[in-house]
Image (cartoon, rainbow, N blue to C red):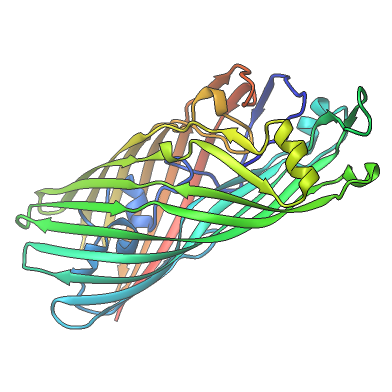
Length: 399
């Protein structure tokens, strides 16, 4: 996302309070309260409605129709239908990625001459995903989804203080900057499950990159005061990365399930943020200021997840988990509208079965590592802090 800092080089120290935030770069922690309350270590399990996200091969083991959804910003839902004893098809709508926030505008007033400008951002996408899963044998199953991804990106910030060509030597405040973009991309998820016995199993999931071609409109509020168009159509491409996740699930006791996952994400695909404005003046002006090609230099990262589930009775289960999620953005490109943190996440949850209806509830405590950022030309300096408590509830029904 493009930041308009102008000549702002002041230390910012603020507690960020996003409407919803990211883990693993721009990606959310996952889908399903059961999986989330087990720290997201679910690739080798994938035996509930969230299989479409974690490992589509898990759906091959469903012998009855299954539907489920999670209460969230956009309610994700999935449905699975066995075709025969070996083949299951399904469809899901879910949000694999998203982050955003809106900040108290008064906190930023000292950095904009006392003028109250809006600071907010929101980025993410929704996947529309048909699924097919096949049980190869009693030990091995495979699955795949085709992901049609609709993405949106909205941002509001200060335009900054600059000299205009018609007023050389006179820096002027250009007011509020806003942009609203949306676009489409495609991707594929491939998965396999191997059950060596009732005690141990392994899973592997690969998610291909998805390049979103954004189109939309940018707005600079005070351009019209200087006979410049206040809006411009614009385009941008952003690639969500390749990710590979492997997991193991073990039953050391009949009632105890222990899981562990490792996920590698190719965030280095976010090398730079390139924007094209169709208005010739916008493209030339913002290009000269260095804002049509902004370095990101994100780095590949590996996420580690652990989980446990203990079945107290046929209808009640307790869960807990942990996830370590390193930040992909380096200090030199950290900013307040697209912040990135190294998280230590602790999770807890409970599951309850009422006939064919399963109710799962979970709670995530995400402790972001504080970041002290020194100004380097393409970042926002300051002390960045993030702490979040995220509840979730999922319902699923087996027909």
